[in-house]
Each structure stands twice: as structure tokens, then as C-alpha cells.
Length: 230
Image (cartoon, rainbow, N blue to C red; front, side):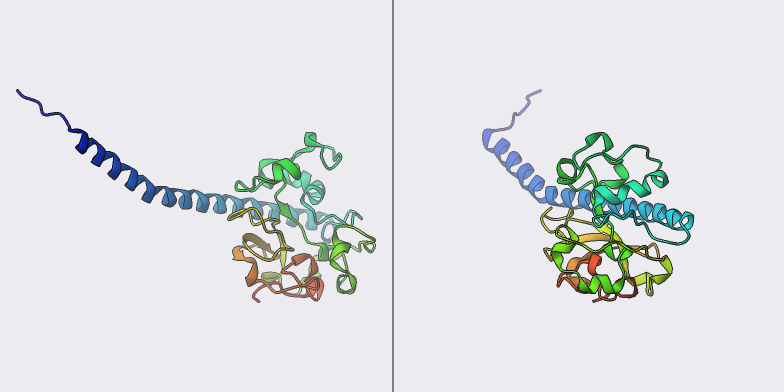
């Protein structure tokens, strides 16, 4: 039997077709992978919400407040919730990797948190431990520097609209560019609302707070206010 081999031109055509198909499919696969990561991230946030609910039940229906004005930051709010996340450890300095957070606190699309924030991707809200009057009087730098007011514990019952008030969310726009924080309006995030549901929203869909940004820390009206819909 005579066997006919591929000619060089035929091989080149096959390679070209294969490359074209790969170029068409790779974005599809990348998109599917990111959708899976968004779902994992949403599951993480939902479980953090369950831990927060358990904390509230054990602390006379009050939201976490350690007296730390910067408790909203991921590497800080994780400690009062640690027992409810089946996680042990002693809080150390901001770069104490021995206290690195468990996987549930890390968004799978977040490449920044493992290097900068000890593996914690999510943020809490400052209006959970400041009164509405304190929030209204705070400028943006008060949330991360300067002379912030003394935190005041807030009851969960102060949340007037649980389905529309954010409690915890991705700090960065982890699912597109890893570039936008709450104070750089842009990108999409998973947001946990006080009633326990999670929504994947573009930041521009939220209302602006006292800081002028779509910042759930500074919701107008504090826990009595609304973050979503705009």
C-alpha cells in the first residue's frame, strides 16, 4: 500500500487553523475561569457573613468593634471573626505572615493581598462601629490616617435596610484589573449585604457616601442608610 504524507503546505494550513481555533477559544476559557473565581469569591464572602452573624449573636446583637479605628481593613477585622472561621492565631504586626489569613479570606483573583495585606482580600465597614453623626463629620483621610474619632459599638438592629446595606466586600476590583479600591470608583466586586445575600456589582451601581466615593464605609446615614440601588 502506498501512503501519502502531508505536504509542507498542508502542515502549515493545519497549524494555521489550529492556532486560529486556539486564539478563538482561549478568551472563552479565560472568561469561564474568571466566572468560576467570581463564584468562589462570592462563596467566601457569604461564609464570612455567616461568621459575622455568629459573632453578632454572641455579642448581644452588636457588630464587631475592637476600639481600632481602622478595623474596616481586612487584616484587622479578621481577628474578631477568627473563632467563627475555625481559625486560630495571635494577631501580630501588619506584615506578620505567621498570622496570614485562611483561604476563605482570600479572593482567588486577588494577586495583591498575599503580598501586601497578609492574604486578606475583603474589607469590613467603618459605619458598623461609628455613629451616623461621626460618619457625617469624617473626611476621607480619617478612615486611614489622621485623628479619627473614638469608635462606638453599633447594634445590628440599627441597619434600617438590610437588603440594601453593604457589610463586607472585595476591597479591590479583583475580577478585572486589580486596580480599583473603594476610593477609585471603578471595577466590579462581590458585595455582602446585611441580610446575607451577595451581589456581583459594578461600583458605579452603588450610591456615593460622605466621602464622595462609592464607599460603604461612609454610607450617608450610616447603618440607617442605603448603598444599593443607586
